[in-house]
Image (cartoon, rainbow, N blue to C red; front, top):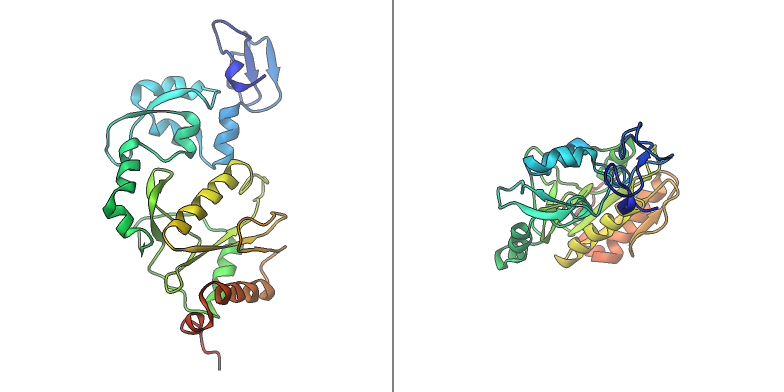
Length: 260
């Protein structure tokens, strides 16, 4: 039975999910020991239902609070102040955003700015202790800028004309991402892996390359992957080798730190 077959009331089979969504407990004819499709998608995209509801038009929020289907269409409010637009829950969580945002990202001015690194004030991205160790270890070998945290792209990514790589090396136009499945084993797998591929493609379109450090059992993703169990000196050495392979030894030499 798919999520689109679920009926919380009215016609069809009354189904209740483990997450509590679906038919009321008293009315449920079937109780499934798994979360509803929408809760699964929220977990894979690392969003909460409250965050999703906050994006919806006021009249849609009550229904969205109880929704189980990812193919259900709702009216959404553009965070950049554009007109309301209609999209499915899946598109709202993983799509490019409102049509005007998408058009603006494809405009000539946006293409001209594509690939420009910049500092986005107030940007808050969670970083793991391992990712911080990787940054510190790389910072001992090459000069890493501390006043850039985003790169403009020529499309939209989660409704924004920019992406936020873990580590940015503007001098080489290379981004470094650290991936592991996390404590719950769901990060960077499933739909999140699809999102990672889209992010890499957006950076490639504007002349950037991406190195992905893949830990915790994750397989290679993209042509410049470093598969490892943990961040070690060997991993840092391999990243430096890839920098040379991608941009050449002369370009990398200009950002190396002289350790004497």
